[in-house]
Image 1 (tube, rainbow, N blue to C red):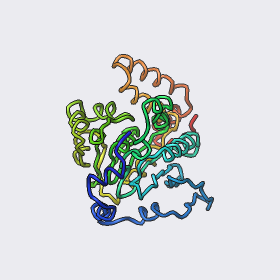
Image 2 (spheres, rainbow, N blue to C red):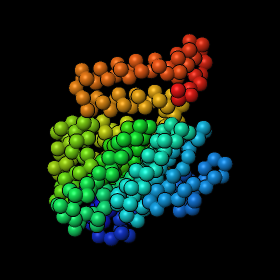
Image 3 (cartoon, one colour):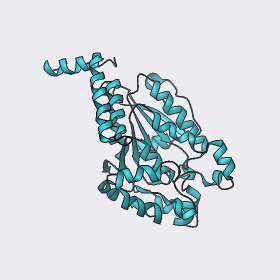
Image 4 (tube, one colour):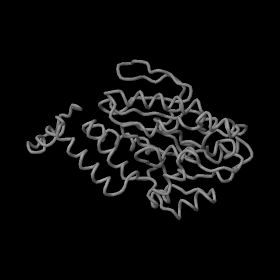
Length: 309
């Protein structure tokens, strides 16, 4: 339950035309132009990919081991409607089961990663309806993905868009990116983790300021506060995310997943419990062929050949 493109546009400007002028990037790379295309994308071997209503999915990397998922609802600034989130959950779960994929990059457009959840879908819903239907429950599917997800954020990541980026494991931001939880402006509060994840990133005081005022922070501030890992020019952020994803995908898939589980546990448990879990996961690697191969390759001064076993 977050800030959506329509309301956001009303805050910024009174017309879609003016909004376009306000948000128009100074330049767009050929990659961004290709991603924005509605033409079917191709996988290696010229195999046509499945088409989605709200997403574009492509396979990237020299070893075709990185999945690039783009939110594709440009007229609504990628507002996160039920259909989009259902598709996203389905795609991410499918990629999580794909043995060829080692890491996932999630991005939007140069104008907006996602301007928020779709207020049109929420406006007339009643208390009994949202409780009985488990409204927004499907969003949590993103957090259950075992493979690492890198959010490559350009433009606006507001409300549900900010929450979605925080569900990912790493956030890279373009220099023009802006983050915020402006739900307070429309008479509600974040409902997909904004009040819980944001304090863990930026601390209580800054999180309170962002949530209670509805103010936004820019990319450099987000980096300073620890919300994002790095800031790049807008035309490089997706490429940089793919580069990092390729490096992650070059490691043992199962060990990467164990490492992700261990780090995530730090936000869910006490230090003592977290250390116990880490030790058990560390011990678990000694039952893996990849652990032995990695150490052997290091001693033999060669590149390891990981098999995911």
